Amino acid sequence: MTYIDLNMVRAGVVDHPREWKHCGYNEIVDPPQRYRLLARDRLKQLLGADEYFLTDNYQHWIDEYIQKSPTREKSWTEAVAVGSSSFVEKIKEQLGIKAKYRHIHKYSGYAFTLKETSALLTIIILNAKCPI
Image (cartoon, rainbow, N blue to C red; front, top):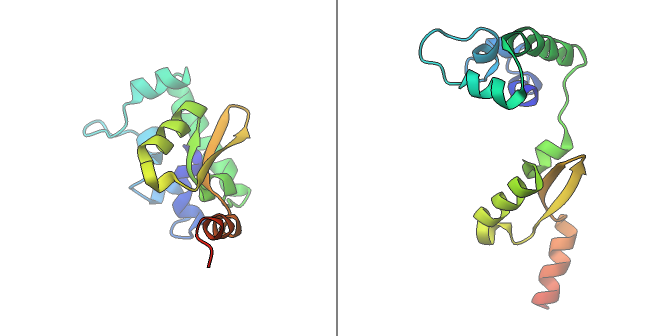
């Protein structure tokens, strides 16, 4: 969540996610009383967290990351999908023919990515199937 909320910071559009009204930061740190976009109770349940965790800790994580000078993480930037094996497999299946040259790779721990093969490998595969 922090990585996504920092997209506009990394892009140089804003200095802090609180300045970008279209990210989830303000929904988490200072939730509106009406017209919430985030199902806070469900998020707390999924994270096994309480209200303090969602507000103070989340704000701390964002500030800490900003101090480190946020950079892109290749796995998120280059992948079509990142998540559990079943999630990534489901995305690949839903992509159908568009996933033809995309493969699932173990990223770390229980995380997997769906990535395109390298351009060179794709050219070799295409040429092998359709010689010039």
